[in-house]
Length: 221
Ligand code: CA
Image (cartoon, rainbow, N blue to C red):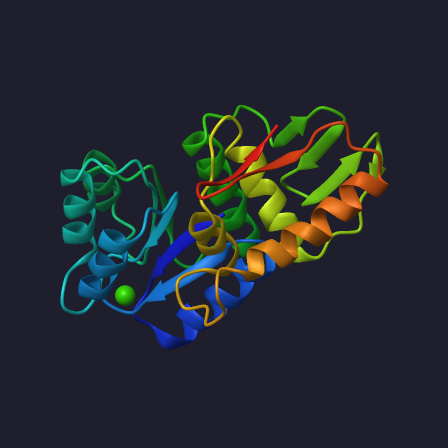
């Protein structure tokens, strides 16, 4: 799940980036509002974790820009501004959730997962395709009831494919979802990752398949 983190405190930004990556998010980070806008214009993010007090462009201005472009990105504001009026102003400007600093990391992650489900129109944290099931909270894939031993990137790729069911997903889109914006690798690594994933799914007896649509991308069938 891709996420844009906008936070000007280097310490908090680094700590959040590491913690969110550990929790399975593919994180791009921006330290000011203008950089955040550049990221938002270049990529489609399901999730935005937004500080309000930011250099160059305030978080409320970032939010206004995002909503002015009608992007469906779910926004969680994470701010030291703890006044009721601040929370109301951010929610009325299009934020989906608001958490006041200091915060509990586990709660922040759970709220982000909830926003990710809403973004995808899911009502539960469980995804399924035939006899394959994903628990998106524990980040465990099971086939015919048995857990699969997947690497974090294989899991991220599988989750992206399940969430994109019914659509053809270009390799570049899958690459961004698994590796993020500053990855140096070529998007051809998706083929390698996919080949390993297919092998594990076949060995586990999965009754579905991942199709190659030459020149277009991949689709879960
Ligand atoms: Ca700040």
